[in-house]
Length: 259
Image (tube, rainbow, N blue to C red; front, side):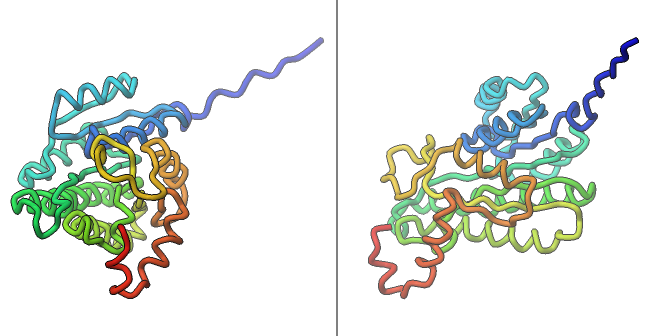
């Protein structure tokens, strides 16, 4: 008489989709991160952004049947609290929140259009910082999840060629690191991702910097780090060493570099 062993049922964890909130729902890097997460198991994406048509197109590109979208403008501070609260309530919280909000502009520095410079500072620090605070408050109440903040290597030492953008991002980066320390015992982790030059629609037409990378490469590095313990990653990783040197160069030398 032979006997057979019934196959073990799949684990519950494997069957439950990972709930992912992408703030900046049309970001090429953000969407690449969601796709990379879905390669490791089912995900339930929730996209927030300022253009509904582009959000719906982005949602369709993910191929996840339960993707939700909602309009939210990072520059409309008065709407942040209600939209973030509604998103967390509808999803019953999120396992991963990706904050991919930002605009690139005012590259001429002091000669840039003043209104454009103000927009870059508002969106990249005030708007993104507001969204960071709202998301972290909801996450810490639940005591669960990882918040991924897309920053830039430029925060290490803002350059003359992108002084406005670099300074605004540096403020956001510092805020994220400070809040990470403030919430370290809450069960919520903050992961700051600092890519170098990334080939996207936003950077099209700009001079390509050394060690340029792609949204997919940033996504691969980010997802590998999501379940780890590192507070900050650089993409590509060698940029951490490059900026460790640049950070300490005398200012008179640094300002002469073609950066």
